[in-house]
Image (cartoon, rainbow over all chains, first blue to last red; front, side, top):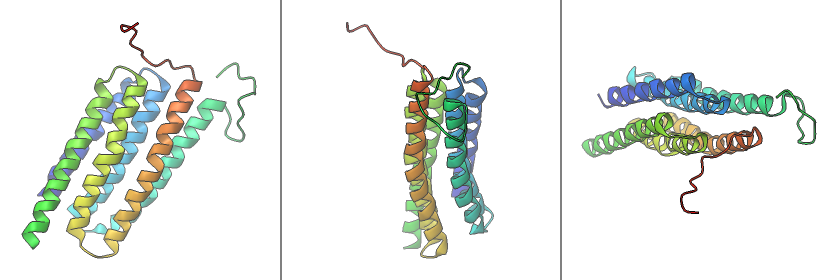
Length: 96
Length: 104
């Protein structure tokens, strides 16, 4: 019962984060919303394991947390420098 | 003893759910990117910690609790880093903070 209540709250939070990702005026709003969505997804996977009585799902949640962080940093680096390989502020970026 | 643990677990899970919903409502309602970043941090810290503590109280002393603690520690390390990188990238990408000049 208590897991069901928390699951419903997590689903509402996911919907609101997804709404911000769809409406977000700037690129950074969308990245922020996707990052929040990823954190809430980690919580959802963890609590879904308890809801169905199989807490082995926690391994997937752990890996998802790692991938979520790497994704955010990689996307940010790509949009900040226009390149994943290197980054320095003194490069002349005109198109990004 | 068992009832006490269940009660604490209920309180923790409900508090975590409330913080999750408050944070994401802030993500929708706040006017500007940097204030939205502030609201999203509530989800990553308080919401995550309360829900994971509620799950730990249900799991008892086992490998499951160790995994939950690992997830919490990892999120607490990475979420401020991601927020800092986002704010830095947004400033570098010429996003202006919304300032109140009425006090001038």
